[in-house]
Image 1 (tube, rainbow, N blue to C red):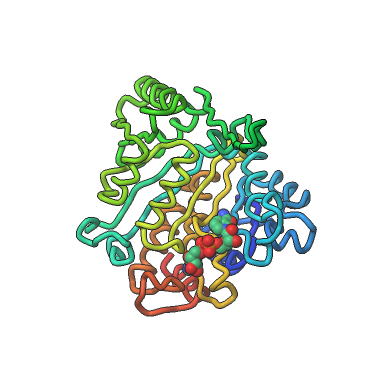
Image 2 (image 1 turned 90 degrees about the horizontal axis):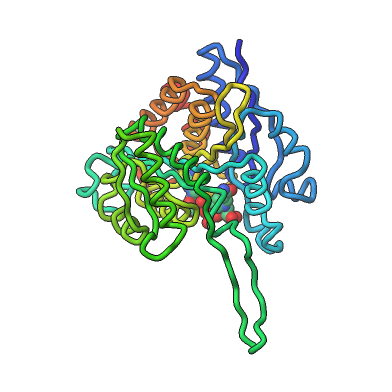
Length: 366
Ligand code: NAD
């Protein structure tokens, strides 16, 4: 029996509840294929601050080092909100993980099933077929990490702050490669988003993406769009896009807009892929729901576990190469949600069941 060894960091708030469901679904689905998930659990986030005095203890990092992927819940909550920014669970747990495993490629599907178009703030007639696109965001470069960075007092008594936006050709090429692979598995269209009318980094971005795709993926249709227009077009007609490819800050903002138009945070998963190959010959990655710890509903059996289950499916696809198994889990989630079963999310309305019942239903639909 082949084993699938991954680190499990459930985190805070609804994290442990939805993670428990994801692990059950994984165990059942993988077991039927004679595969054995080997989740190695560790503390991260607020719970780790409480137990070990730091959001990402060395023991947690060790367990991640020894695994082929990380299945992450979410971290943070009101209890830790007054800590200094650098010690906040999100910043102190996620950013070091991104750095340690060079998680440069964030893949966020924007998916809304046609049966649930009413959950989107967009008019249903604009999205009769639902929504189906993917945002590929560069995650380790750009203005969030560029140096120099800082704040200083000026001799004239004024005060200034500085951030640096910087991109290398090699960083743009490697994220373009992820977008190409994604487009090949879907509609074969990439829209690269930048601000090339103003930013030098965007001029380079546009040039490198154009050259790289001409050389390596001439069969993929490439278009370019300025980020301000892309924000408008997402709200006007999201299905004009197949794969959106963009840099770190633009992707941060656009992928959140995408989450809103897809109706529910409880349904959206994400993958952050690294540069390192794991023992299965696939990319090491971190997989997590798009939403946070939802403190308002934590511990009430109300959280929608679908985003966490779909994140686990992404892990099977990208870090273990188990495409068919991932498809099967995704289909079970879809069948469960479109059969009228809903949990947590008031945006979806309709009959309500608990987190655990939702998990049971997903398992029975496998
Ligand atoms: P949130 O995503 O936790 O919640 C926003 C709203 O969406 C809430 O009403 C919540 O109930 C709902 N929601 C989110 N996920 C849901 C689910 N699975 N099922 C049903 N409803 C769901 O965002 P927030 O309230 O801004 O943040 C809460 C905490 O989470 C903060 O401490 C924040 O720092 C943290 N956070 C962590 C991550 C992460 O770990 N990657 C991401 C975002 C926010």
